[in-house]
Image (cartoon, rainbow, N blue to C red):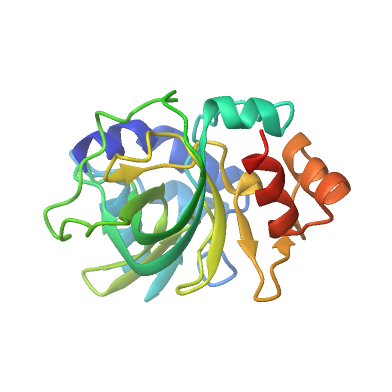
Length: 240
C-alpha cells in the first residue's frame, strides 16, 4: 500500500491549492476565503489530518477532499492497439475496501474482483506492477479473483467522513464491467491506467454502457462498430 500511495498521492500544496481554487468542496464544506487562509497547515500534518482538523473547526462531520491528479496511460487509437497493450476482461466487484494511504496524503480503494471471462491477454505493463501490494488488512484473493486498485474513496477518520472521488468512479458491487487491465492478468493487484473513461459497466441485457463517457477512440468504436453489444465485441476479439 505504501507504494500505491507514492504513485497516486499529490503533495499537500497541490491538493490545498486545488481545494481553494477548483470548487472541490461541497456546499457543506465551503469556507470564506479569509477563513480558509486562517487554517494553516501545521508542522508534520498530512493532507488527511489537515482536512479532519478543517472539518472539526467548522463543526462538520463530512467533507469532500480534492481528487488527486493521476498520470493516465494514452488511450489506444483502436481496439487492435488496445489488445496489444492491455489484458481485456469481464470482471465483477465482490467487495470494496477504502483505506488511508500509509503516508496520509490520500485515500486508496481496493475492489476484490471476480474474473468472469478473459477476452484477451497482454504481457505488456504500463507501470507500478511491482509496487502495488495487498494491504495487510485484506485477505489474499482466491483463484479467479484479483484486487483492482484505485485512488480515492470514502473513509472515516477520528469521527470525520472524508470522500475523495475515485479514479475509476465508484463501481457497483455484483455488476459486470469491461476492464482494460494494465498489468499481467496473473498479478494479484491490478489497475486500469486508462482511467474511468475506458471502464464500462455491462447492463443485464448484455449492452456496454457508454453513457456519460467523454469521447475517445475506444468508446467511439464500441458504439459504431459493435453497437454497444458485449457479444459482438467478444466475437470480434476472439476472431483476431
